[in-house]
Length: 392
Image: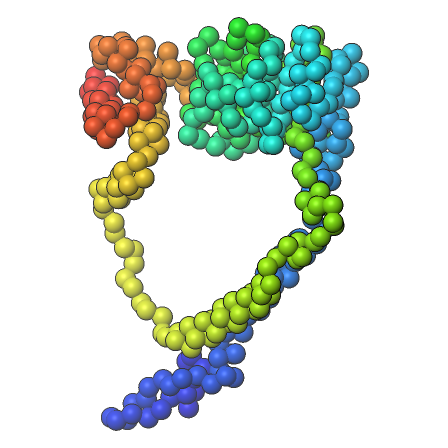
C-alpha cells in the first residue's frame, strides 16, 4: 500500500502501518518538480550568459556610446551649444589637457583617485565612490534612495530645470554648500565651493544616459551642470584588459594555466553534490506543524541587533542608525519639512528644549563615537532630547 510520500507502508504491531524507504520510482515522483525547476534555472542562466551583450558593448555615461547606458546624446547637445567635450580614459590625459576646465568623472574604477584629486578646477562627480579623496567635505548618509522623479527643492541655478530622475546615493550638505533633490535622510545632489573651483556630487548619473535624457527635466539639468562656459574633460573608465593581454605573448588559454587534475576535482565535486542530494532527499519526512505566529518581544529584537553591532564593533553604523531614527521622529514634532538641514533642526531643538546648540549638533551630526562608552552616552543624550521635545 502506498503512503502519502510515495513510499510503501509496512504493517506493524497493533494493525497500524509505518513508512519505509521510498523506491526509485516513488522518489522520482516526489522530487520531479524540484528537478524540473533546477533544469529550468540552469537553462535560463545559460541563455542569459549566451545572449547578454559583450562587456564592451555598453559603457555607462560614455560620450561616444550610443547604447541606452551611454551619453552620446548629451555630448552632442553640449557640442551643439559650442561646448568643447574631450573624452579621456586616464588621469594623465586629463592632466595633459590643462587650462581652466570642468572635470566630469563618471567612473573611477582602475584610476588613481589621489592623483585625480590633485587636478585643480571645477568637478562634477557622479556616484558615491572614494569621496574621501575627491570630495572630502561631503559625507554620505546611510541610505540608498530609489531612483525616481524628484523635485529639486533648492535655489541652485542648475536645478531650475525642475524635476529629474535622481537617487542612488544621498549626502549631507557640506558647510556653505547647497543640496537639491532631497531623499529621506539627505540630498541626492550637493554643490559647494572649494579653493580651486566648484565641486558638485550627484548620487547617480542615470538621468544623463541616452535612455533617460528625454524624461522630465533630465536634459536641462545635465546641460546646466556641464555647460559652465568652460571646456569639459569627460573622464571615463579605461577599457579592461583583453583576454589576449592576460594570456601573454604565447597566447595560452585559461585552461592551459590550470594545474593538472582540476577537471577530476570538479567531476568529483559534482558527484559528491549529487550523492548528498540523493541522501538528504531520502530522509525527507512529514511536514512539521508549528503554531503561528511566533511572537518575539521587541526588547529581544533590539538586544540581539545591539549584540551584533557590538560583535562587529560597528559603532559608526550603530550611531548612524540611532541618529537617523531620532531625526525621523523629531522632524515632524518640530514642525519641519522632510528636507530640513542640520542648522534648521539644531536651531529648532535648541529653541524648544533650551539645550546647548553645540552639544545637540555634536549628538545628531557629529563624528561617530570612538568607544562603547561614547556610544552609550550618545544613545542616552539622544533619548534625552527626544523626551524633552515630546514633553513640551
